[in-house]
Length: 172
Image (tube, rainbow, N blue to C red):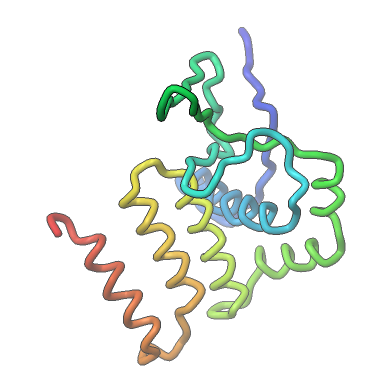
């Protein structure tokens, strides 16, 4: 029997029921991916550009069937990927980043840290989905997570909520 091991392995502890462990772990990985992206600029590889699909952190990228998209005779695009450099690892281990991670992964209920963690998770989801409508919905949800406060009369929250509900309504 051959066991495939990906290039990266995530070890995640989640306070969830057995049926929800994979989903909850994926969410925490999504939060970590956005935090890591924002914590350093020392990535190697063919980084995904704005609007390009980002590799999924736990599902393998299929390299046996790579594809290229030709926009015209001189332009071709490949799917993006990240390679972790030694400097990126050092940046992730800085006390400031570790402190932020501690706060984001154990936030107080209804705190700014909880809203930021939610926003980071939705940002990662938005970068991973190919469907533009789902992508837009994920990014609006990230904004709503960041801007929502306990004051439900906040006009920014109301505006984003109205737009998200219209976008999400089937047939509109």
